[in-house]
Image (cartoon, rainbow, N blue to C red; front, side, top):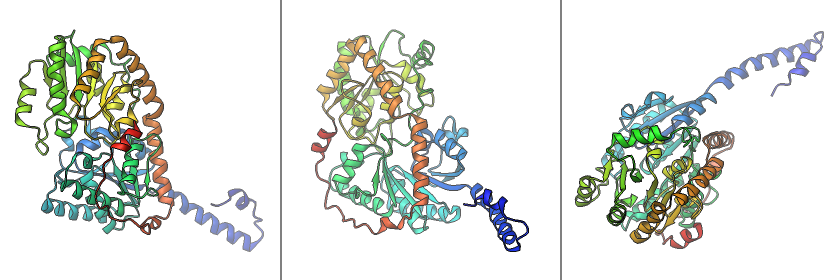
Length: 448
């Protein structure tokens, strides 16, 4: 970098010094222009919901830091509330969550062409399908920094041969990436223990997560009785009801069957209790028809049937949150619930064990255990004092470890570090295909 003090002090009478000074000034006039050129970042996600749920504020932050952010998702981002706030250059490529060789090949070519046109410095993928397609396309397009994000672990809930296929795709995505970012420490341990990614390539930023929680937006002090009444009135929930809330897609992997079974017991024990399902059924991963019919026919179950943007008001409307998931990356629902001071019952799986301190900020139970789930929710419905105690501790925990400004700064610093670090060193690391993914129960016990 040019030393301006020495340049100004150069004797004007010396011809050689003057030439050096002139040359230096010319270089200096070029430096700001180069520095002002934005760094191009491309974020690829299978569905637009991922971008709208997690990245709106972070894209604004990165844009302010000099990045030119592009997003590639399936079509439909304009259907989401608040989409005009997304300050990215948007590109649409149809992608499906399910495996579809022909559609996936078409999507891969389209993503590759986009990357060749954009010529980004960084590509970061979110969600598994976009991760595989994005990493292949970015490698073929010679993108220098390729970040594969491990946000969830669908491999946990699958059986052979699907499990073996997912293991291969995870390994391949990690192999093609120059950096693998795991959204929680327990997810990172899983990836390393099951030989899906070498430890030197896998990182977790801070306490985890990649977008953090806006503690000012998710503030129980700012969302009180008015929001509580508005949401309850909108979905026909009595004002004096005890509300158990579930937030997320209504798919088998989220433990919807266990939730329905647990609810049958709880509704009989607590006549004033209602179940609020803030989510929608997903055609790609449908629940059983009989189960769906049961959830939609119960007058004390209230279903939004769609993605909502006004989530702080939703959390204000419930008394207990429940997340009986089989797998998670780092549950955003658990973090947002905590920020709103609402106690949660979740399963002891990777991701949830990072977001919840059992008995302190929430309650953890074993996945697929209906009796344990029922018992934990019962404890919270019976005790307003316990709900308040866990809720206060949860907000303090999340505000300290997962604040949005802190997380966004960690992401920015990681981008800058990777840009400045030669990336070809990762390509020389030896990675061996996993012959299979062993049981992870012992690791989960350590995480808890």
